[in-house]
Amino acid sequence: CFSCPQGYPGSKCVRFTATPIFNLMNNSLPFNKYSFLTTHNAFAIGDGTPRVAPTNQEDTVTQQLN
Image (cartoon, rainbow, N blue to C red; front, side, top):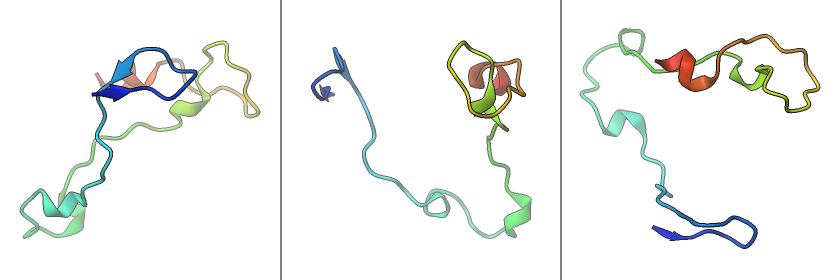
């Protein structure tokens, strides 16, 4: 954990380095045989935040992934 930058209260635990995904798994399968957890167009949910694009999602990212 670390102290958040000025303007962000509290502290958070974060991973600050990226790991290439294929370093973590058995890469013996072709690329199209792996599954990746994703969500689509979650940026355009109608949550009260002003948007440039029209909203196109009813669920939050968490709701989409559950």
